[in-house]
Image (cartoon, rainbow, N blue to C red; front, side, top):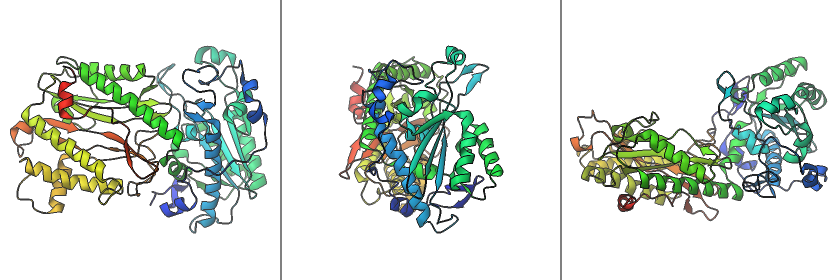
Length: 519
């Protein structure tokens, strides 16, 4: 079951079952056609928006990044409209079929999704801004301090409204151009747009006229002032309804990638694969882990990635036995392995790849044994996906633990006395205590509201990443294996014909090829 996605004042009131989500077609990417009355946004948007200045790259200003018929890289405006339409219809149907904790007769709903806000490392120095993924998924807007409100009534009439920062010449002089309220409707394909100051009175009016259920989760909001406004409005209107979280339903949609999203996933994985190949090819003894970090960042950006998807793990020698090692400050030495876990973001979608290779271009005998175990295990896990033992990510993890325990036993690393599957599984888990897979998409650990016991379906993207980590202090392991860490990770798409596509297949992982990369 999805873990408690409906909340009243941040307290769960009812879990959402996966069969309920399927019944409302939240998982489906075949969106119902959106019927709208032609508006200026649909008929003359190009003319209206020509020679204007926006708060984000658009096709008119960045044709090298965004095609003419796209709102953002790789995604057309109509797809965003369909997502909003599908969410609201699915949400309404979900409530009608739900039997616990919600007024099933409710046909009026309002969903409020906030953007991210700027965050600062010191005084006026901001971190690189990254948009809230759910907000971006539903409207394609890349500006901070913005709110999307969607409503549906008993006649299935859907309305989308953006509350934006207004144009401000002084602020824009310092922080860059804003799209502004006047251009927002045309650019983002919403029905109406207003300054943020209008949010409170418009919400009050909506509550008074339609008395909708309000879907908003303050715990995932970066906008504390918005939280206060919503609480104040509910008090002002004496609303007795629960505040419900829409995040589980949005994640149910995000879990299944549309054809356009699948293409973006292919591109981000291709960029990262090529970049990692170049980094492995150029690595030499004496490079610091920090230098390798810089190389992967540089190589990804050279290929038009926006930035790295997360702080990469660049772990040489025994550092690779720390699973989330990100200090990246040690010098590499001849004879060491380097484990690098890195990915990039392109068009709002992320890759996540791990490779392990010898700094000097040659595996030692113990390194060969451990690397071959992990690589063979990874290939087997990929091959059983969609089959018994690999129909869900949790099943895949259980299979990994058992197989890893068996292979390590054959290598003399796990005791020969273990002769049952449970014992082998526990032994394998001891050497690889992280899950073998997670969903992947707009976020690295994508759609966290979705459990990993869900049957793999076409359109899902996930990782397969077995590893072995042997501390240098382990006295129960042959000495030659101590202080070694190996992980191999690829990104996998379940295709429409229920087959496996390895999105990161271009990234070298065969041992003989790794040894020949820099020769």
